[in-house]
Length: 215
Image (cartoon, rainbow, N blue to C red; front, top):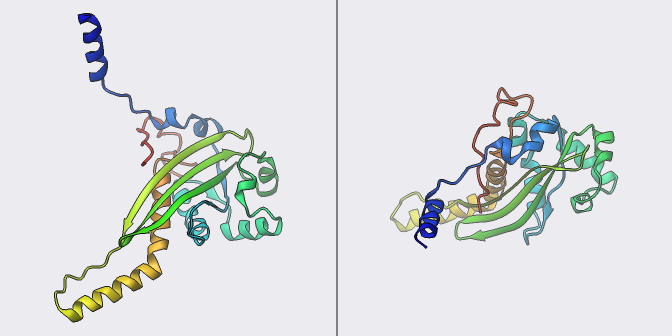
């Protein structure tokens, strides 16, 4: 009995292993995708504009990570013309046609499960995954929950100052909050992405610690 208890104590006290990027995303290093096609997001939230907001901002963190991104505007026009605007149709379908038509090594999918205003900010829950157009395998898969506080406070104590604060907060929220939330959420979910060919750390970051899903 004492030995069993001692074994349990040792097991509980043992440090947990944090996987590296190479361990968490081995297929990214095996297939080495260079050209990515970003599909229009799958919007499961009640905010209908979320699909377009995310689509316009997904490419930036991917390009900064060293990948060649097919022009979202060009891809959008072609996908709409080919009745392929709904990414839901291709999540579980073969993607070899995207390789033939666009020259894409992998396709980027995004699922927006939550986009909710709370207080002076926005809460969003998203999942992004990258699938190979050659093997059909998921190369990268990440989820994130993010809250962006967009409250505006000038610190004025006067009645006029309070009214100005309120107006500024309303304008800020109406114009920029959704765009900022989309950009920051995309940066968060891709911050752990293995670096692409056009980044100095290409194939040199396998030993970096992988970050857990932010849920």
